[in-house]
Image (cartoon, rainbow, N blue to C red; front, side, top):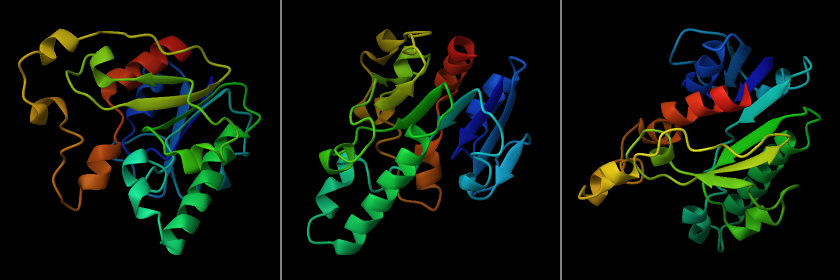
Length: 197
């Protein structure tokens, strides 16, 4: 299969599919962290360049996520950024590719009401896929089945502190914070490749 992994710099999803002998390429405005097929630039440059069999997109969530909705009120610049982010998200939902997954955290209502598919198809957690951590990850799916839990390790979270369970949520302020919070968990990437490849 020809697979485009949009808005991915980590290479985790791309490499999970490559390990299963698919032709996969990641694309981001950032360099890839791991050597492999990667287009550094605007995804619009390659989105229609070939007939993709599967597109997995991770559009930026800064202006879409529920946790940031409070910053919209009275901020016209942030509101416009949110509308631009919705249009970018819809770019993937509108694509004619037969199989599409668009991933984001839980989204606020102002953004959801403007999406081509308002509600996510599925919400998953890292602990369903081998990581004893919480981070609600939502998928908007077209032509794909729901992702099944591949290795539920919720029992490993019993007795652990909130800081350990919610590492991504409590990521400290740093230059790497946004990147660290946006990487796909490897267990989720492997489950996507195993079930959608």
